[in-house]
Structure formats: C-alpha cells, structure tokens
Length: 610
Ligand code: F6R
Image (tube, rainbow, N blue to C red):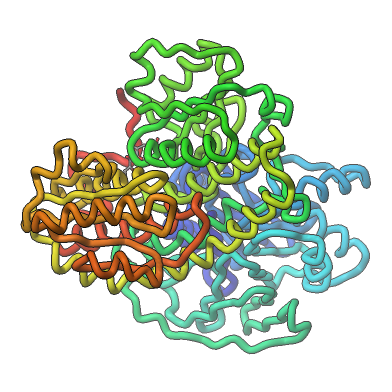
C-alpha cells in the first residue's frame, strides 16, 4: 500500500506534491519521491525515509514546476532505499505505482534480454520500460500505456508522465485506489482524497480499467474493458480533513478492519497457482528440498501475532503432520530450548522489530534452526535476519491494536501450510486446488462478514459497562477467544480472559454470574457439539451468553442471549472470519467507553525494548 499524488495547473506543483504526500504518509513511509517537468525536461528527486526527509532534501533547490507526480512508498518488492523509491524512470517516461505486478519477474527478464537496463529491485520499473518500448515505436503516451497494460498482471494504480507530452498526466486504475480531483484550470490525482482536499472537494472516482488523461483544461477517461471513452460521476466531498485521512472512518482501527478484504487479497496475490495446485515458493528462499527435510517447527511471536502462531499450529499439524511448538517469544529465549536438526522456526511479526521476537529468532539461528518470518514490513530487522520471508502485504497498520495484520498472518500461514503439505506429499494437486478455491473466496467472505458491524454495535451498547468479560473457544478457534480478550483489554480497559471452553469446569466456571458476559466463538466445526455443551454449562449457572456462529445455526441461537452470524468457510479459515466480529466488538465497546482507540494508554505500536 503506497500513496500517489499528481498535480497539473498553474501553481507551483512542488509544495502541493509534498503537502499531498504528507497526507498520504499513513499509506506508507519508508521512502518517497517526486518527479516534475520543467519545460519538457523531467526531474526526479527521491530518498529513503519519511516525507520530511524528502522535503529537507529538495528545499535548498527552490524547484518550480506546474506539473508533477509524487509517491510515498511501503515496500513490497525490494528493500526501502533510494534506488527502489518512486518515481521510476526509463528514458523520458516516469511512473509512480501503488499495488503489485505479479508477473514483473518474467517481464523484467524478457526485457533484460532485449537490452533494457534496470536500476531497482522493484516490480514498478518494468512498467516504465514497457511504456518506453511502445513510445519508441511511435505511439502516443496514452496508446503506449494501453499496449503496456496488456502485459501486466496484478493490482495497480499508476501516475505516468512523459517528456514528449509535458502537458498531461495519465492516471490508471486496476484494483488499487485512484481518484481525480477537479479544480479551476488545475487537476489532481491521488490514492486518497485527503491528499488534495485542501484545494478541491470535487472528486472523480476512477473504476477498474480506467485510463484518465489529465490536463489543465480537463479530464477524459478511457476504459480498457469497455474499449471506449467513458463518463465518470463527479462527487462533492463533505468530510472534514481529519475524517478524510481515515477514509471517512472515525478511527484508523475501524478503517483497518474494513480494509481486510483488500489486505487479504494482496496477501494471496501472486502466491498460488490454481491450475497446478501449487504455491510459488520463490520469495521464501526455502526450497522444496528444505521443506521435505523439516522434522520440527517452532512458531514464535508476541501478543496478537502469537495468537496467529497458535492458529498456525492447528493448520500445520493437521495439513502437514509435522510437530509444532508454539512459544511466546519472551519465554522461548529463556527456556533453554532444545532444537533438533531439521528444525524451522516460523517467526510471526507485523512490525519485524519486536525486541523479544528478534531475540528468539537470533537464539533459534544460533542453535541451528532455519528461520522463516511472516512479516508486514519490508526491510525490517526480522526480514533481514531471516532465511526466508513471507510478506503479508497488508499495508501500514496505524492503529495500535492489530487487526488486518492478524488476518493476513492467518492467510499467510494457510498458504505456507499448503506449500509444506504439497512439498511433503501430504496433499495432492486437487486437494490443494480445493483449498485454494476457498482461499480465493476469502476476501469476498470477509466483506460479507463485515456486514455484521451494526449488529455488533448493538451488542456493544448492551455490554459496554461491564467490568469483566470471558471469551470461550475450542480447537482452531480457541486462539480467537484469546484474541477477543486481548483486544478488549487493550483498547477498552475491561478485564477479559480467553479460555478453551473445555477448561471451564476446571476452575473458571466459578466466576459465572449475570454480571459477566461470556462470548462463545462457535462456528460449525468438529467441536461444535462440545462448545454447545459448554454454553449450556454457562447458561445453567445464570451466565449471559453472546455467540459468534455460522449463518443458519439454530442450535447456537437457542442458547445465546445475543448472537452474530458469519458466512461459512472451510475449517482452517474460520478463524479469519470469526476475528471480524471479535475485533469489531472490542472496537465499539472502546468507543462507547470514550477510550483512545488508536493509541491506548501504556501501549506502543512496536515494542522495541525487552
Ligand atoms: C495487539 C498487538 C500486539 C502485537 C505485538 C507483536 O493488538 O498489536 O499484541 O501483536 O506487540 O507485535 P509484532 O507483530 O509487530 O511483533
């Protein structure tokens, strides 16, 4: 998830681009850059680091231009560095890009053979070279772009400029957001409205396949799928600038919860081959041979990422039949772990900078294990020190409470489990294809699950004043009970505990009275009957039950005082779907209690000290 801005008009574009980038910094902040035209001469300025670094770097030059594009990056391909920062350039063409080009590697190798020289590790650079190839054949910028797009697979929003056509910016949208802002004799393009809200409230939302040619005098849109010019509606934005930054959501946490369909789709993108029922292992730097030799797996993480690790154990042991140990990172390093030959440690970390997780990772390597990190931040310490990396591509997570990072970690664990099971002959191609079919439906199912928001808000109103909360789950959804309790504690300051439901009778059931709501995570799985009996135990002791279940489950409905119903998916993916109401409930309760949802007391987004 990166941020794009573009301006064409009569004012100096440079401060407008820098201002816009600052508003988009929440979309990515590992490097930034701008490109501008002076006459028909392209200039590019880029650097690693935040926008203020770029601003400081260009300030001395007193640059002036009336047309330019800018970019703030959140790395997906290639570490954060000046060479990998956007805009990228080939000849007289510059491109800024948000998204992932799945087939960039093949395209790049092909073009290298034709003599193209690449200077970055990014997927974006191939786009400039492709467009350049077609302009060199005599096509206009727009025609060359149309030809280039025919080669691209994946998701992208692009801003494109050319020295040969210094009076236009092209804006291209395919599965990544891009909007056009319309002013008087000036126009803007951006990944998100706040980038230009200071200058105009008239916005044209582009649709997939749109190529908008943006000049000072107007905007015309061609749609690749329709094969013709199209008209797009112009809308008036009434949001305040603060609301716009969060895309109209009240908090980053809620925005990030609602981003999950996109985040999960990006995590899946380019990783699986449905036709062959195989996983693309190239970026893990772990070969099929390595995977065959594994005889023990350690899953290590902290907090919410540790909950993902617990789910991972169910997935891996069930699909792959390799024994897994799950450790809290701060415990692993001091427990003198025995690491047999052929061990793999899977580290799970959103930030890649959590001190305890890094210490466990280093300890495991010292003891001879190989390390795969499932991480959201490209170039983070964990990713640099690991033998292999599985990036989750969920985009920057600003809210302290992890939501989209968690469900993308689960998605990554699912894909990795299939890879492992395939490499070890535990799954045939057709079984893997069935698992992939379900996976590919996950973004849509998460979207459908998010429709429970109003129902969850109602439940939150009813229970937001309680002092204690209990969450129950079993099997692969037991970690989701832990996750529900952690989220409630950290953002609403209500005391909450997560328990495996079968353990109730060994102690916690003594706590049950009508002052403590009990939430049961009860999807239709192999332990449904068991958790239904546990719910009976609570009910018969006067407890108040809230259930999170699957659509049409009448057995749960008759036992629970309140329930929300979720779409069905396969056993391994139920934790992703069940997390949706769990996170929303914590969010709404915290809002009703007037808590600082995005920055809860005593907590930091990244815990870099022991
Ligand atoms: C809770 C939360 C934390 C993190 C934990 C690990 O909502 O966000 O518990 O999960 O601090 O952080 P990472 O995943 O960055 O290592």
